[in-house]
Amino acid sequence: MEYEDSRTIATPEGIELALPLAGVGSRFMALLLDSILQGLIVAAAAVLGFVLLGDVAATIVLSLGLLFAYLVYDVAFEVRGGGRTPGKRAVGLRVVRDGGGPVGLRASLIRNVFRLFEAALLYAPAIVSILVTRSNQRLGDLAAGTLVIREPKAERATFTTPPARVPAESYASWDATGVNEAELAAVRAFLQRREELRPAARRTLAAQLAARVRPRVAGVRPGLDDESFLERLAAAKESRMMREISESGHEEPDIP
Image 1: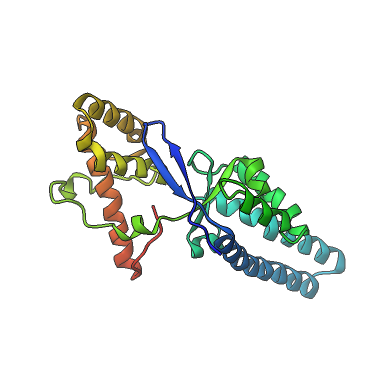
Image 2 (image 1 turned 90 degrees about the vertical axis):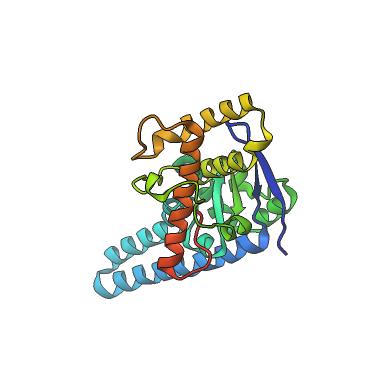
């Protein structure tokens, strides 16, 4: 069974974001896919050790393979892969901090050390915890302050070409890879709701958002006003998504 619970968080820019939470079903599927890959890693380490090396060296190699497969694997992918192991990426899940930010090394290490203990008990404590907690958190998530969320399908399906009023040449040289998902969601929310805001609040919120993300975007010409900058940032990100669709041949790319 999969649940459609969500967690609403308020960004520093004053915008509320709804994060769709992953349930037991999707998390189990991601775990299954990762377990297959981890098993292959351990098998490769065993073959390498016992076929090519002596008993002592083989034991060391196998131990390192187990450590990598069942701890380093998850931590490395979560920290360096935007909160997604290969299994989570395939299912459309992501690990984030409970405030919506990217997961760090310390948090990922805590949640995955706890996972080893949960695995020893056949994940029974993890399943119970996911079902009874408000944010679908297993014990490792509670200890680390993390959430597992589902990639919003609606957002992935609504990418369109940049608006005609934002010329492509005005952001063609920008490098916006430093802007994360939560920040981009805040920018999009502002652009969608700005007409509902009073002029003073609109200017203030645009300035706050621009001040937060502008240092992470390379190639922006000096003197560009805050709202125009945010329009071009959103267009640059969407343009990148369209290029990925074209290059990969897939209809639904990963969120940038």
